[in-house]
Length: 261
Ligand SMILES: C[S@@+](CC[C@H](N)C(=O)[O-])C[C@H]1O[C@@H](n2cnc3c(N)ncnc32)[C@H](O)[C@@H]1O
Image 1 (spheres, protein in one colour):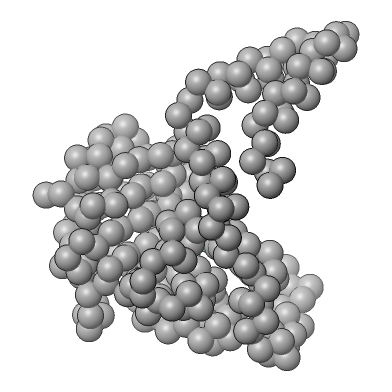
Image 2 (cartoon, rainbow, N blue to C red; image 1 turned 90 degrees about the vertical axis):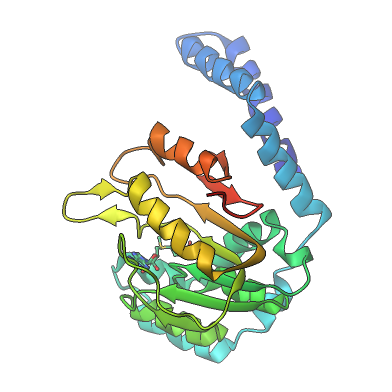
């Protein structure tokens, strides 16, 4: 519950610090200015409302954790403990499940009747594991590049199609249609070695391909990554997502009423 008051608590603390004066007063005045400006932005209220809804419609973690094979998890953790690999951190499932719980809650998926969900770039399958435990039918799609992810998917009993998403190439036949297609912390939209992000043409190709895989009334949700030190998208790409029927809220691209062509 205290999380709900986070923006307001920050403002109060900035006001207090301003009142102290001294050499840091300017810094805190600026901070206060930014905090107050945030209050004029709809994003602040949308986020606050999401936090409120997470409290009103909880999704307890304990039963999720209790359903995991502890012995198998211990063995996985031991195998990756102390490794300097960037992705070894994902073995700490107690850290990643809460973040994925929020993703499920924010899409209200724990409050819906069973859906068929495809998650692109599913990683270790945290999001799909929670969905599966909430009664949904799930399928992940990802490259097979990190053994830990494969082990976690096994631990969570989340099925995955091994596939590398490439610009202007359709996805494989997945044998079914989906009510939801999601992708979080996306990085399949990167051109290497040029370090260029996908533009409208690449996204248009993917969206048209996903449209064929979407059941009637299906929805698509993407959470973009800020990559190569740039923003989430160019203004052209933002306009493109809007023109295809998305609501765009910073990194969140949500086609809640499907795609528009
Ligand atoms: C930052 S991780 C995010 C994992 C997961 N979605 C999450 O939020 O926890 C990005 C994932 O996308 C996958 N990925 C990257 N490029 C991909 C591609 N071209 N096709 C399929 N998956 C890809 C990676 O293997 C990795 O699992």
